[in-house]
Image 1 (cartoon, chains in turn red, green, yellow, purple):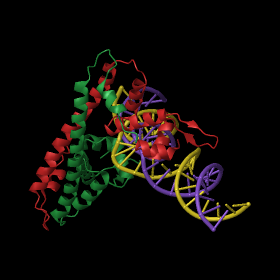
Image 2: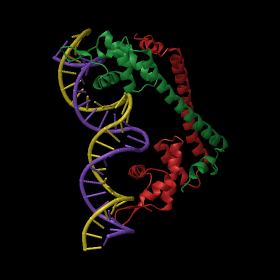
Image 3: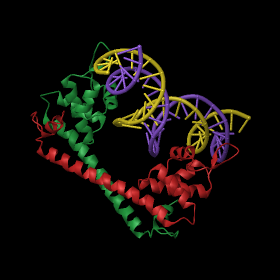
Image 4: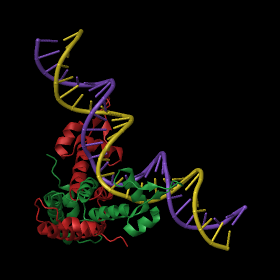
Length: 131
Length: 131
DNA sequence: CCTTGACCTTCCAGTAACTGGAAGCGCTAT
DNA sequence: ATAGCGCTTCCAGTTACTGGAAGGTCAAGG
């Protein structure tokens, strides 16, 4: 199967698939013409990675997940450990963004947003402490 | 004022301050020895940028905010427009992360996390559609 | 047989915003 | 004088791609 076909079926851009080969996530065969020749096995791995990426796992985590994926006998605890770490990271980021959103919303609400120069947003930015 | 001093007062690493000069956010004077010589004016700009960055504004937005900051007569509407766009972006990201967190949490909860290979997390990843 | 156009190849560069490190000065104190 | 810290510049690496150029391949139509 050619790369365009795989791209369509996996939902990943061809460029990205070539990149994934570069960094060793997949190792498709090559035809006599030099074209990559993907087995359905490769297609599944790529779709797997695509899904993991869409869940926010890093490439390195995807690499680990792939190796666990290919090990039919690995313990589910190994997989869960990765997911848990990732979840914790997401929740930290979430809390951070929530605080940010609240701060910004407050500033925006308090700003008249008219032709006058008075602006609580600017005041807040300018008020940054310079010990 | 030397860069180390400015770094301490502004809370920004010296490396970052040099980078900010590189990209034209500040233009400190130079002493005869080649050392950067920051005025309190530069220090305030850097602290301003540091605060804006910590609120998640991009460097380009910081550049715009700085120019508005230096224009005592700009309309508060201009500032608010930037903040509003940024807030919208944050809220989109927030919604995305919330969905992600829910999905992952569900998967993690359903995974036994023991020595057995059965794993709903893996099942979900592997189940990615390959049209 | 030739051409056209879609598809494939590699390689180089750029993105955002720094960060680390090397090599080499300047400054201050002992 | 020398030790040691602070300053300088420059180069490279980070993350995960993405865009584009230059050129080879393949199938279809004339």
